Length: 214
Image (cartoon, rainbow, N blue to C red; front, side, top):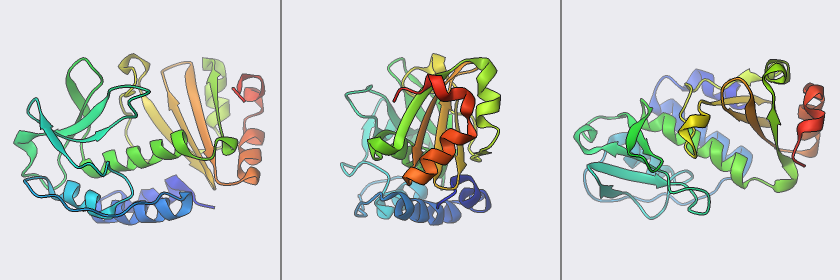
């Protein structure tokens, strides 16, 4: 079983390590894709991410409002997009900005880390629905529910559907991936690699039993 936090922690220091993590993560969770290359100026990290082929939109980047946009959320959920400001294109692994409809704002300080978040989000949103669930947890249950899981070493991130529901935080266990958004009370989203891993996740947070959506 793949443990996201344990696998990312020793690799997060540079983008080569992050790409190694993403290859392992994609294989473990069944993400697939074909690498592509695109002409035009872009940061080295973005070019490498497209070559990796398992994370970013195959349509390729577009320039708009002074930003090189490289990823779009599912349009049925939100019109959010992510990009790199044009004045940062000469950086190897520059900061990323996000637009949720109200203008561009900072997202995370490295393209490679944005790619990790995008990959993790894909698993939470698009994994086998029988191995996924969600719960709205009151503040008193959040700490106990997450106590048995390891914090994935990504910074707090803006919630890309509604920034007022920030921050986004990631957690994991073997074969288990968890995302929370909100402060105090949170929404919890979970995915598991197997029925056994999902049962173990439920067993680790008995207080959430009456809060699951499914």
